[in-house]
Length: 165
Image 1: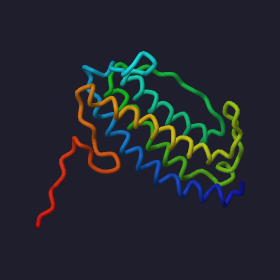
Image 2: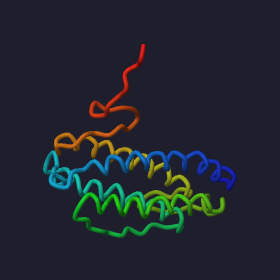
Image 3: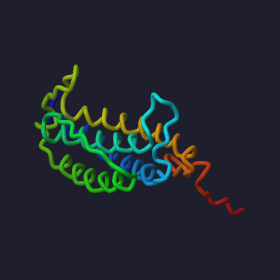
Image 4: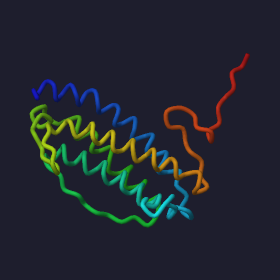
């Protein structure tokens, strides 16, 4: 991958990552404390654990691109508000660091498990991963007694203004 291509991919993905961050934080913020241990089956994570996974994976991927390698840092959260505080404090500064990365750093190959790809390509993986798990988490909200926030438009739980005729 050329440096120019890597910079172009970043220019395309970074605004999307910022937009999805705002949507994801609304879903995490909707998790009720008293029912955050809900999980739809034994094979699933709890709502709290899924929210933590989303937040920690986002910082994992962003830091991996910034640092040129991946290092998972496990962290436990006791309540959804702590996950949201971590997400809010950690992710936006990483977006700013990504925006300042030189193109050669974005184009450099990084190995993660069986994949070796240019660093910038992990941002697409981060985007897909976060959207996937946010969808799972949004499906937990109603059984937890919460309302589903607007994601890509109003949900059945969001108020919409009727057209004035």
